[in-house]
Image (cartoon, rainbow, N blue to C red):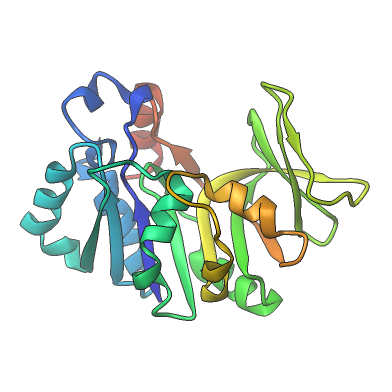
Amino acid sequence: MNALILAAGLGTRLKPFTDLHPKALAVVNGKPVLQRNIEYLQGFGITNVMVNVHHFADHIINAIEANNGWGSTVTISDETGAILETGGGIKKGRWFLEKTEDCVVMNADILTDMPLNEMIASHVRTMSIATLATTNRTSSRYLLFNSSGQLCGWRNDFTGERKMPFDHGSFIDKAFSGIQVLNREIFPLIRNQGKFSMIDVYLDICRDNRIDSFDHSTYKLIDIGTAEKLEQAGQMFV
């Protein structure tokens, strides 16, 4: 199975560190978060990894080369010309990701001890086109799932915006964790162009295609997007 780590973001919430460095190289207990996530994937047998780059792309490329991919075979997806967001980055990496029946995509700025093998097994068992890692944590934005765990909407509690491709009556709110398992059949369905969010793709196709939740609320998860969160991550991950 191949994987994509999304490391192209500007990391504006992590200033002033990101004025001089890419967020993916922020250090938690002596290890850059990018290294931690490459090693996290290795723990589940995934050693062919693509990393997309934009902000201080040369720093990330040099770190990967200097450390021999931290034991994995790493391919670079170059977005230095224009950042493509999650959906655009996944679409650009299609040629690499669809080499395997299923693939993993994860944000570079999250750390977790979620059992990825269990998420993959759930994805295969339900024959979903995509499975999204979620938790019950408080968030400003929620994915909405029906009682069967199938995606049917999205809500932003900060702006009041709501997107409901189809109405299933009652909903279960889940916060997205930035990790997804995709079946390669999803790629022909991505019709968006340029810079776009993958969440918009999921909402466009969820009426006719099964997109499931994998809840891992009992496991550790942190987004190292701020200095405070980065410090907290050091207490959670040795």
